[in-house]
Image (cartoon, rainbow, N blue to C red; front, side, top):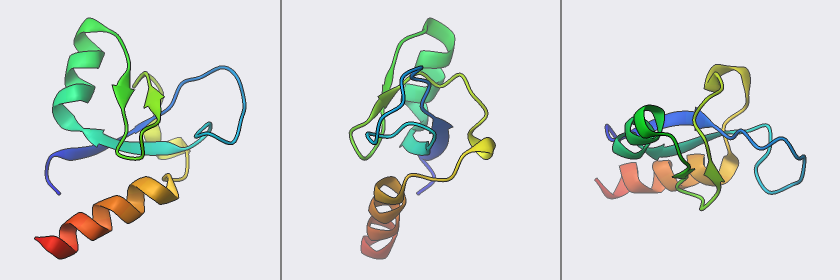
Length: 74
């Protein structure tokens, strides 16, 4: 999808809910949050602030699965 972009979560606490993963989210939300601040909701539902380098983390398996499904549907 051309409207998704990888951005990482930024929570300082560690749990199994999405920490240390890069997530897919709508580009518009990432741009807005980068400019205005605030959180973005990933495709998997995880909320994060896009402030860390997403290339340093593995991609969220659920986000990846959802993007692949959307690409198959066209």
